[in-house]
Image (cartoon, rainbow, N blue to C red; front, top):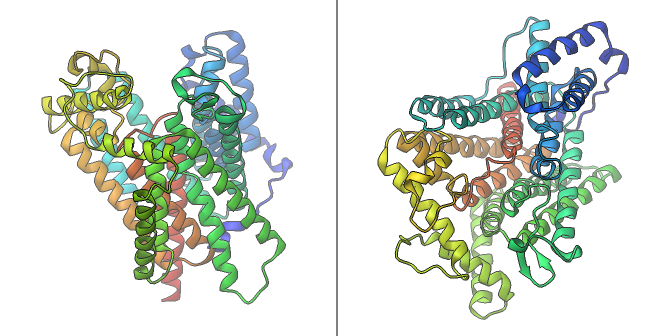
Length: 497
C-alpha cells in the first residue's frame, strides 16, 4: 500500500482559517451537547473540558484521525484517571471520540459530501449493532443497554473515519509511531508495577515482591488484552518492511532499519507486559495469535502448518519432561482447567480454587439468564442488573460481565445476537484473509498482524470481555485499517485487470 508511509503537513495558517475556527466553535456546542454535562460536576471541570475541546477542535480540525488517536491514548488511561481523580475529570477518551465524529460530520457538511467509505465490514457490524439495539426493548437496565449500543455505533463510525483518512493519504507512519509509544509506555509502567515497585495491590500479588502488571487499566486482564491487540501489529510492521526490502533490489535504508528495530522493540515490550500481567486468557490468546501468524507467514500455507506442528511437538516434549518454568506451566494448566467448565453449586470454596470458581459462577449465571430467554436474551448491557436474580447462593457479588464474551452475548442478546456476533467475526476473518492474499510489503505485514489480533481476541474472549475500558475504540481503529487495506487491494486488482 503506497500511502502507508506517506506524509502530509498541516499548516497552522490553514488550521486557523476563519471557516475552521467557526467550524470548531459550532462543533464545540455540538460535542458538549452530546456529552453528559451533568457528569462534569464543578465549574472547574466545565472550564477544563471547554479548554480541551476548544483547543482540540482548532488543532485537529484538519484531520479527525488525530482526535481518534487522542481518544485511544486517553481512553486507555480512563481507569487510572478515575482512580486518581475520582469525580474530577470526565472520560476524555470518549470526549475525543465525540470531537472526532463531530469534526468528520461537520467537514462533510461543509464540503456538501454525505458519502462514506463503502466497505464490506459495514454490513455484519451494522447487523450485530441493530440486533443489540432491538434487544433494548427487553432490557432490564435500559441505560446500560443504550451505552452498549452507543459503544458499537462508535466502533462503526471509528472504522469509517480511519478507513477514509487512510485512503485519503493520512500518514500511517505517524499513527503507528504514536501507538508504539503508547505500547512502550504501558509496558514500562507494567514492568515497574510487577517488579521494580516492590509492593502493590494484595489481590495482584504473585509472590513476595512481585505483582501482576496492570498499566493504566487498573486490571491485569484488559491491560494484557490491549498489549495482545498491539504486539501482532508491531511484529507485522517489522515483517512487512523486511518483506518489502527482500522483494526490492535496493539496500535496506537506515530509516527502514530504525523502524524495524522499533517495531521489534515494541513487540518484545508488549509480550513482556503480557507475561507480567499473569493473565491466563492473554497467554492463550498470544499463543493462538503467534500460531496463526506463523501458519500464514509463508505463501505456501502447508509450510506454515508444518512449522507450527513442529513447534507444538517441541513444546509438548518440553512440557512432558518438565523443561518449562513451573510458574508458567501452573498458570497455563489453570487456564485449561477453567475451560473445563462444570456446575459448581456443590463444590467447596478454598483459597486455591476461589479464582476459578468465581469465574465459573459468572458463567453459570450467564447460562441461567440465557435459559430464561434463549432467543432474544435479557437485553444488551443487562448482565449486571440481572445478576442478583440469577446468581448462585454463595456468590453475591457480580463482576459486571460474564468474563466470557460468548456467554455474555448469549445471556444478553440470546442465540440470535450471538449468531450475529459470530457472523460479524467470520466476516472480519474472511476479509482479512482475502486482503492478506492480495497484499505485499508493508500492507501484507500489517494485515498479517491484524489476523493475529483477531485470533488473540477470539481466544482471550473465552475467559474475558475485552470490549471494556475504551478498548472498543482501539478495536474500531484496527477495523478501519483493515477496511482501508482491503479497499486499496481491491482497487489495485481492478486497475491491474
